[in-house]
Image 1: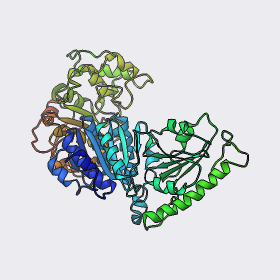
Image 2: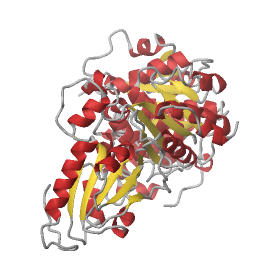
Image 3: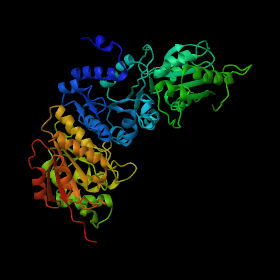
Image 4: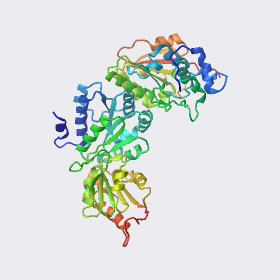
Length: 322
Length: 234
């Protein structure tokens, strides 16, 4: 079987692809080790049988999950630790801070569940704050793939590297994989009246929402490091809408940092801070947070209209709290 | 920082003097540190580790989990040549490599950064797994924790898993000076043995007894030594 065949499967979600690619990588790279806390353990069983010392299911122990990743890295291995985002990042946050970052070792954290993948489970399985939390720590590369093919490629790169990588998998996916070069943003569309940055699986909604608008649309499958240079190089009117599939505004400070010397306005859209206290489906939660194409179109349109008053021109945009 | 060649220049009797360099006093109260004898026996008689082998993948590792009050640790590291004696006086200073909690990125002799309780044993579980996965089955990991530190639930995730997994490269020392607020009725050893560990208790001041307990064979299981320390009379 070639790598191409492994990367070009039938319909398969990001988590299923993660299992298949990681199983393949375990055969190739003796440095790689997978640590689990029951979640997805069954799918990794064939890999565990082949590599019993490098595929370890700890049981329902998430603090140990992250610490063991740190301990494996101290012994020279490349650990991949995986569970739902709420337990991987939120429950074990001090272990991430101390047993990975403070020790000065690398690891690949791969989460499932995202912000509301399993909406019917309620708040316990929703982790919209994960990227913001990791943003309080130095050194993290944060990938938010928008398609299983992107996830596969980012995973392969992360496994072969040494640093701290968070790969945020979701059941939401764009219809097709987008071209992604390294950690850079991809230009999906060019326009003059503003820039819309779509992160990960929200790209399709954003493209629909901005149909016919004179805006630049950038796509980010990697949000840390934040690709400020591409934002600056493609900037027309300095009005930026950032659309993230997790806590609204998470990367607004990164936009501000990239545009420190340019008067600009920025609108951060994403998952709201308030608890919805709703069950239901992913689509219902997307709509409730105003992240469906129709809501996005109205919010982006309103923001851009405010940035271009009659007579207003490029470079004269005022600072404005959205 | 010049690291001294491994030598026997300093012995156990020199530790109070080395600690005085950090504390800046001559009273030597700190020489009563509960961890002092365990640390000395580990570095003097048990660990297959020297400043020269610090970069070797097959070395034994020592993880100081109970990072509080690390003067005894630094004194032992200095005595064994992992650290220049001239570094000791800077203890806790802004430019010093010796903090009130150790940082492995500043002090090469420290295998982990610690200070927040309940991290050393879980890290050691990961390292023991990693050594086994790398075929380095001769290398051992020793981790020192306190009886009060056992309150942290993260330890119990590690104890249960390590026992069931039979991680025989893993060795824990629990320095027991009865400081856990709610105690451990029935004994600390029981918390480990019921999970599948080999467990024993030794006098935490008796070097021969500690050496014997720390080197007792424990094929197929992790091993814990509860080092009992009588609290100093007021």
